[in-house]
Amino acid sequence: MGGLVSAVLGILNDQLLKMRWLWDLVVLLIEKVFGLSMETRIGESIHFFIYDTIKIFILLGVMIYIISYIQSYFPPERTRKLLGGIKGIKGNILGAILGILTPFCSCSSIPIFIGFVSAGLPLGATFSFLISSPMVDLAAFMLLMTTFGVKIGIVYVAAGVIIAIIGGVVIQKMNMEKYVQSYVWAAENMDTELEKMTRKDRMSFAKNQVKDIILRVWPYILIGVGIGAGIHNWIPQSIIEKTIGSGNPFSVLIATFIGVPIYADIFGTIPIAGALVAKGVGLGTVISFMMGVTTMSLPSMVMLSKVIKPKLLATFIAIATIGIIIMGYGLNAISGLII
Image (tube, rainbow, N blue to C red; front, side, top):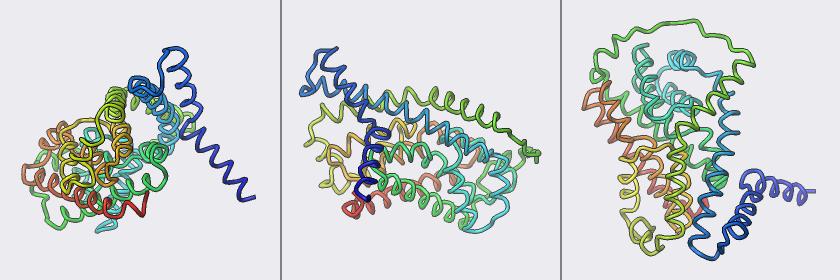
Protein backbone atom coordinates (compact mmCIF):
# COMPACT_ATOMS: atom_id res chain seq x y z
CA MET A 1 0.00 0.00 0.00
CA GLY A 2 2.82 2.37 0.95
CA GLY A 3 4.55 1.69 -2.37
CA LEU A 4 1.38 2.55 -4.27
CA VAL A 5 0.96 5.83 -2.39
CA SER A 6 4.60 6.74 -3.06
CA ALA A 7 4.18 5.93 -6.75
CA VAL A 8 1.03 8.07 -7.01
CA LEU A 9 2.69 10.98 -5.19
CA GLY A 10 5.71 10.64 -7.48
CA ILE A 11 3.52 10.82 -10.58
CA LEU A 12 1.66 13.86 -9.23
CA ASN A 13 4.94 15.59 -8.39
CA ASP A 14 6.41 14.89 -11.84
CA GLN A 15 3.31 15.78 -13.86
CA LEU A 16 1.71 18.58 -11.82
CA LEU A 17 4.61 20.37 -10.13
CA LYS A 18 7.63 19.61 -12.31
CA MET A 19 5.38 19.36 -15.40
CA ARG A 20 7.15 16.47 -17.08
CA TRP A 21 4.42 16.50 -19.73
CA LEU A 22 5.44 20.05 -20.65
CA TRP A 23 9.12 19.03 -20.77
CA ASP A 24 8.31 16.26 -23.23
CA LEU A 25 6.12 18.55 -25.38
CA VAL A 26 8.89 21.14 -25.63
CA VAL A 27 11.37 18.40 -26.60
CA LEU A 28 9.03 17.45 -29.47
CA LEU A 29 8.77 21.13 -30.45
CA ILE A 30 12.56 21.53 -30.51
CA GLU A 31 13.26 18.33 -32.42
CA LYS A 32 10.26 18.01 -34.77
CA VAL A 33 9.30 21.63 -35.45
CA PHE A 34 12.60 23.50 -35.07
CA GLY A 35 14.65 20.56 -36.33
CA LEU A 36 17.26 20.95 -33.59
CA SER A 37 18.91 18.25 -31.52
CA MET A 38 18.64 18.33 -27.74
CA GLU A 39 22.30 17.32 -27.73
CA THR A 40 23.32 20.77 -28.98
CA ARG A 41 23.75 23.91 -26.88
CA ILE A 42 21.27 25.83 -29.01
CA GLY A 43 18.66 23.09 -28.71
CA GLU A 44 19.13 22.82 -24.93
CA SER A 45 19.07 26.61 -24.49
CA ILE A 46 15.84 27.05 -26.45
CA HIS A 47 14.28 24.15 -24.55
CA PHE A 48 15.37 25.65 -21.22
CA PHE A 49 13.90 29.04 -22.13
CA ILE A 50 10.54 27.79 -23.45
CA TYR A 51 10.00 25.12 -20.79
CA ASP A 52 10.94 27.28 -17.79
CA THR A 53 9.00 30.30 -19.04
CA ILE A 54 5.76 28.40 -19.61
CA LYS A 55 6.15 26.40 -16.38
CA ILE A 56 6.73 29.50 -14.27
CA PHE A 57 3.77 31.39 -15.73
CA ILE A 58 1.42 28.41 -15.28
CA LEU A 59 2.51 27.86 -11.69
CA LEU A 60 2.38 31.57 -10.91
CA GLY A 61 -1.12 31.96 -12.30
CA VAL A 62 -2.49 29.08 -10.23
CA MET A 63 -0.55 29.76 -7.05
CA ILE A 64 -1.02 33.53 -6.99
CA TYR A 65 -4.77 33.06 -7.36
CA ILE A 66 -4.97 30.60 -4.44
CA ILE A 67 -2.57 32.52 -2.22
CA SER A 68 -4.14 35.90 -3.01
CA TYR A 69 -7.53 34.52 -2.02
CA ILE A 70 -6.00 33.65 1.35
CA GLN A 71 -4.20 36.99 1.52
CA SER A 72 -7.51 38.83 1.07
CA TYR A 73 -8.04 38.14 4.77
CA PHE A 74 -4.91 40.18 5.57
CA PRO A 75 -5.31 43.70 4.11
CA PRO A 76 -2.88 46.39 5.36
CA GLU A 77 -5.43 47.64 7.91
CA ARG A 78 -5.76 44.22 9.52
CA THR A 79 -2.01 43.65 9.38
CA ARG A 80 -1.49 46.98 11.16
CA LYS A 81 -4.00 46.12 13.87
CA LEU A 82 -2.43 42.70 14.43
CA LEU A 83 1.06 44.19 14.76
CA GLY A 84 -0.15 47.01 16.99
CA GLY A 85 -1.44 44.64 19.63
CA ILE A 86 1.81 42.75 20.25
CA LYS A 87 5.03 44.12 21.71
CA GLY A 88 8.60 42.84 22.06
CA ILE A 89 10.05 39.95 20.11
CA LYS A 90 6.54 38.56 19.59
CA GLY A 91 5.87 41.65 17.49
CA ASN A 92 8.98 40.94 15.41
CA ILE A 93 7.93 37.33 14.88
CA LEU A 94 4.41 38.37 13.88
CA GLY A 95 5.77 41.11 11.61
CA ALA A 96 8.02 38.61 9.82
CA ILE A 97 5.21 36.08 9.44
CA LEU A 98 2.73 38.68 8.17
CA GLY A 99 5.39 39.75 5.67
CA ILE A 100 5.16 36.26 4.18
CA LEU A 101 1.39 36.50 3.86
CA THR A 102 1.31 39.92 2.19
CA PRO A 103 1.95 40.26 -1.56
CA PHE A 104 4.30 43.25 -1.52
CA CYS A 105 7.60 43.67 -3.32
CA SER A 106 10.42 45.75 -1.83
CA CYS A 107 9.15 49.01 -3.38
CA SER A 108 5.43 48.53 -2.67
CA SER A 109 6.24 47.54 0.92
CA ILE A 110 7.53 51.04 1.69
CA PRO A 111 4.14 52.87 1.60
CA ILE A 112 2.87 50.17 3.97
CA PHE A 113 5.92 50.83 6.15
CA ILE A 114 4.97 54.52 6.31
CA GLY A 115 1.42 53.63 7.34
CA PHE A 116 2.65 51.28 10.06
CA VAL A 117 5.09 53.84 11.49
CA SER A 118 2.52 56.65 11.45
CA ALA A 119 0.10 54.35 13.27
CA GLY A 120 2.60 54.06 16.11
CA LEU A 121 3.65 50.44 15.56
CA PRO A 122 7.00 49.43 17.09
CA LEU A 123 9.81 50.29 14.67
CA GLY A 124 11.43 46.88 15.10
CA ALA A 125 8.27 44.94 14.19
CA THR A 126 7.77 47.25 11.22
CA PHE A 127 11.30 46.54 9.96
CA SER A 128 10.78 42.80 10.44
CA PHE A 129 7.79 43.16 8.12
CA LEU A 130 9.77 45.32 5.70
CA ILE A 131 12.53 42.70 5.44
CA SER A 132 10.37 39.58 5.12
CA SER A 133 7.68 40.98 2.80
CA PRO A 134 9.83 41.15 -0.36
CA MET A 135 12.28 38.44 0.68
CA VAL A 136 9.81 35.65 1.47
CA ASP A 137 6.65 35.07 -0.55
CA LEU A 138 4.21 32.16 -0.48
CA ALA A 139 4.05 31.93 -4.26
CA ALA A 140 7.84 32.01 -4.45
CA PHE A 141 7.97 29.30 -1.79
CA MET A 142 5.76 27.04 -3.90
CA LEU A 143 7.83 27.78 -7.01
CA LEU A 144 11.05 27.07 -5.11
CA MET A 145 9.65 23.71 -4.04
CA THR A 146 8.84 22.74 -7.61
CA THR A 147 12.32 23.77 -8.78
CA PHE A 148 14.54 22.61 -5.92
CA GLY A 149 12.36 20.42 -3.71
CA VAL A 150 10.49 20.83 -0.43
CA LYS A 151 13.57 21.00 1.81
CA ILE A 152 15.18 23.91 0.01
CA GLY A 153 11.86 25.78 -0.19
CA ILE A 154 11.46 25.46 3.58
CA VAL A 155 15.10 26.42 4.18
CA TYR A 156 14.70 29.60 2.13
CA VAL A 157 11.57 30.68 4.01
CA ALA A 158 13.09 29.83 7.40
CA ALA A 159 16.27 31.76 6.58
CA GLY A 160 14.30 34.81 5.47
CA VAL A 161 12.12 34.80 8.59
CA ILE A 162 15.14 34.47 10.89
CA ILE A 163 16.92 37.41 9.21
CA ALA A 164 13.73 39.51 9.42
CA ILE A 165 13.19 38.76 13.12
CA ILE A 166 16.81 39.37 14.14
CA GLY A 167 17.03 42.53 11.99
CA GLY A 168 13.89 43.95 13.58
CA VAL A 169 15.04 43.10 17.10
CA VAL A 170 18.43 44.78 16.59
CA ILE A 171 16.87 47.96 15.18
CA GLN A 172 14.37 48.07 18.07
CA LYS A 173 17.16 47.67 20.65
CA MET A 174 19.11 50.52 19.06
CA ASN A 175 16.18 52.94 19.66
CA MET A 176 16.42 54.50 16.20
CA GLU A 177 12.96 56.10 16.06
CA LYS A 178 14.57 59.55 15.84
CA TYR A 179 16.07 58.59 12.48
CA VAL A 180 12.67 58.25 10.81
CA GLN A 181 11.75 61.39 8.85
CA SER A 182 9.47 63.66 10.89
CA TYR A 183 6.76 63.82 8.21
CA VAL A 184 6.30 60.04 8.50
CA TRP A 185 5.33 60.34 12.17
CA ALA A 186 3.00 63.19 11.29
CA ALA A 187 1.31 61.34 8.43
CA GLU A 188 -2.43 61.12 8.87
CA ASN A 189 -3.59 57.67 9.90
CA MET A 190 -7.23 56.82 9.27
CA ASP A 191 -8.51 54.14 11.62
CA THR A 192 -11.09 52.95 9.13
CA GLU A 193 -13.57 50.15 9.53
CA LEU A 194 -12.39 46.96 7.84
CA GLU A 195 -14.49 46.32 4.78
CA LYS A 196 -16.10 42.91 4.75
CA MET A 197 -15.42 41.02 1.54
CA THR A 198 -17.77 38.51 0.03
CA ARG A 199 -16.59 35.33 -1.66
CA LYS A 200 -17.10 37.05 -5.01
CA ASP A 201 -15.01 40.00 -3.84
CA ARG A 202 -12.20 37.70 -2.77
CA MET A 203 -12.27 35.87 -6.11
CA SER A 204 -12.17 39.22 -7.93
CA PHE A 205 -9.27 40.34 -5.71
CA ALA A 206 -7.38 37.11 -6.48
CA LYS A 207 -7.92 37.51 -10.23
CA ASN A 208 -6.71 41.11 -10.10
CA GLN A 209 -3.64 40.04 -8.12
CA VAL A 210 -2.78 37.43 -10.76
CA LYS A 211 -3.06 40.06 -13.48
CA ASP A 212 -1.19 42.73 -11.51
CA ILE A 213 1.70 40.54 -10.35
CA ILE A 214 2.23 38.82 -13.71
CA LEU A 215 2.16 42.16 -15.55
CA ARG A 216 4.69 43.46 -13.04
CA VAL A 217 7.12 40.53 -13.05
CA TRP A 218 6.98 39.11 -16.59
CA PRO A 219 10.02 41.08 -17.87
CA TYR A 220 12.12 39.86 -14.93
CA ILE A 221 10.99 36.28 -15.51
CA LEU A 222 12.00 36.40 -19.18
CA ILE A 223 15.33 38.03 -18.34
CA GLY A 224 15.93 35.57 -15.52
CA VAL A 225 15.11 32.55 -17.68
CA GLY A 226 17.33 33.91 -20.44
CA ILE A 227 20.25 34.37 -18.04
CA GLY A 228 19.57 30.92 -16.57
CA ALA A 229 19.68 29.35 -20.04
CA GLY A 230 22.97 31.11 -20.74
CA ILE A 231 24.51 29.97 -17.45
CA HIS A 232 23.23 26.43 -17.90
CA ASN A 233 24.43 25.87 -21.43
CA TRP A 234 27.05 28.44 -22.40
CA ILE A 235 29.17 29.43 -19.40
CA PRO A 236 31.82 26.79 -18.60
CA GLN A 237 31.45 25.21 -15.19
CA SER A 238 35.11 25.93 -14.43
CA ILE A 239 34.49 29.70 -14.63
CA ILE A 240 31.45 29.54 -12.35
CA GLU A 241 33.26 27.32 -9.85
CA LYS A 242 36.24 29.68 -9.81
CA THR A 243 34.04 32.76 -9.27
CA ILE A 244 31.30 31.60 -6.87
CA GLY A 245 31.94 27.88 -6.49
CA SER A 246 32.38 26.11 -3.16
CA GLY A 247 36.15 26.33 -3.53
CA ASN A 248 36.08 30.13 -3.36
CA PRO A 249 35.85 31.28 0.29
CA PHE A 250 34.44 34.63 -0.88
CA SER A 251 31.61 33.08 -2.95
CA VAL A 252 28.82 34.17 -0.61
CA LEU A 253 30.20 37.73 -0.39
CA ILE A 254 30.48 37.96 -4.18
CA ALA A 255 26.98 36.55 -4.77
CA THR A 256 25.42 38.90 -2.21
CA PHE A 257 27.07 42.04 -3.56
CA ILE A 258 26.24 41.04 -7.15
CA GLY A 259 22.61 40.63 -6.16
CA VAL A 260 22.17 43.87 -4.19
CA PRO A 261 22.24 46.39 -7.10
CA ILE A 262 19.97 44.24 -9.31
CA TYR A 263 16.29 45.18 -9.37
CA ALA A 264 14.25 42.08 -10.02
CA ASP A 265 11.42 40.09 -8.53
CA ILE A 266 12.19 36.82 -6.75
CA PHE A 267 10.43 34.97 -9.59
CA GLY A 268 13.07 36.24 -11.99
CA THR A 269 15.90 34.98 -9.77
CA ILE A 270 14.64 31.39 -9.49
CA PRO A 271 15.66 30.29 -13.04
CA ILE A 272 19.11 31.82 -12.46
CA ALA A 273 19.35 30.04 -9.11
CA GLY A 274 18.37 26.75 -10.73
CA ALA A 275 21.10 27.08 -13.34
CA LEU A 276 23.69 27.98 -10.69
CA VAL A 277 22.77 24.98 -8.53
CA ALA A 278 23.03 22.74 -11.61
CA LYS A 279 26.56 24.10 -12.14
CA GLY A 280 27.56 23.10 -8.61
CA VAL A 281 27.25 26.45 -6.82
CA GLY A 282 26.61 26.08 -3.10
CA LEU A 283 23.07 26.36 -1.75
CA GLY A 284 23.98 29.15 0.66
CA THR A 285 25.67 31.14 -2.12
CA VAL A 286 22.60 30.87 -4.35
CA ILE A 287 20.20 31.84 -1.56
CA SER A 288 22.40 34.82 -0.64
CA PHE A 289 22.20 36.02 -4.24
CA MET A 290 18.41 35.68 -4.29
CA MET A 291 17.98 37.48 -0.98
CA GLY A 292 20.30 40.30 -2.01
CA VAL A 293 18.28 40.88 -5.19
CA THR A 294 14.86 40.84 -3.54
CA THR A 295 15.59 42.70 -0.29
CA MET A 296 17.99 45.51 -1.13
CA SER A 297 17.50 46.57 -4.72
CA LEU A 298 18.69 50.08 -5.54
CA PRO A 299 15.22 51.49 -6.39
CA SER A 300 13.77 50.33 -3.07
CA MET A 301 16.75 51.77 -1.17
CA VAL A 302 16.28 55.11 -2.94
CA MET A 303 12.60 55.11 -1.95
CA LEU A 304 13.42 54.11 1.63
CA SER A 305 15.96 56.94 1.86
CA LYS A 306 13.06 59.37 1.48
CA VAL A 307 11.36 58.12 4.65
CA ILE A 308 14.28 57.31 6.96
CA LYS A 309 17.51 59.18 7.65
CA PRO A 310 20.93 58.03 6.40
CA LYS A 311 22.02 56.47 9.71
CA LEU A 312 18.94 54.24 9.94
CA LEU A 313 19.17 53.37 6.23
CA ALA A 314 22.83 52.40 6.62
CA THR A 315 21.96 50.35 9.71
CA PHE A 316 19.18 48.54 7.85
CA ILE A 317 21.44 47.76 4.87
CA ALA A 318 24.27 46.60 7.16
CA ILE A 319 22.03 44.35 9.26
CA ALA A 320 20.30 42.80 6.24
CA THR A 321 23.58 42.31 4.35
CA ILE A 322 25.42 40.78 7.32
CA GLY A 323 22.43 38.55 8.06
CA ILE A 324 22.30 37.31 4.45
CA ILE A 325 26.05 36.65 4.38
CA ILE A 326 26.07 34.76 7.69
CA MET A 327 23.04 32.74 6.57
CA GLY A 328 24.75 31.98 3.26
CA TYR A 329 27.92 30.62 4.84
CA GLY A 330 25.88 28.69 7.39
CA LEU A 331 23.77 27.04 4.71
CA ASN A 332 26.86 26.19 2.67
CA ALA A 333 28.29 24.46 5.73
CA ILE A 334 25.22 22.29 6.29
CA SER A 335 24.00 21.94 2.69
CA GLY A 336 25.04 18.30 2.64
CA LEU A 337 22.39 17.59 5.24
CA ILE A 338 19.69 19.46 3.29
CA ILE A 339 20.20 18.45 -0.34
